[in-house]
Length: 89
Image 1 (cartoon, rainbow, N blue to C red):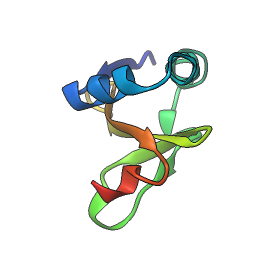
Image 2: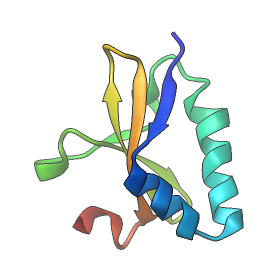
Image 3: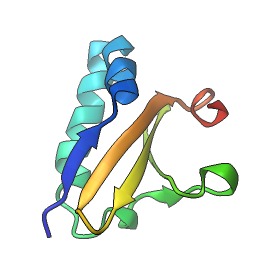
Image 4: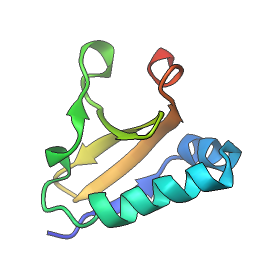
């Protein structure tokens, strides 16, 4: 299975505000770790409560919130933020 990665406009905006080194680390994580998996849920963490439809990936002090669409094989990045702020929205 080949998964496709997509970013919401909010995620793109959040990425553009990050330091270059953090942004590169996130892109490297996505390319090397997530896209090489047959099941993107194997390294992620399912969230609970009002965020139950999301999965979280951890990259240093940053969290990447995604929705995984199995029917279309898409990993949709919806929120990328520091761990102290990401779960507040």
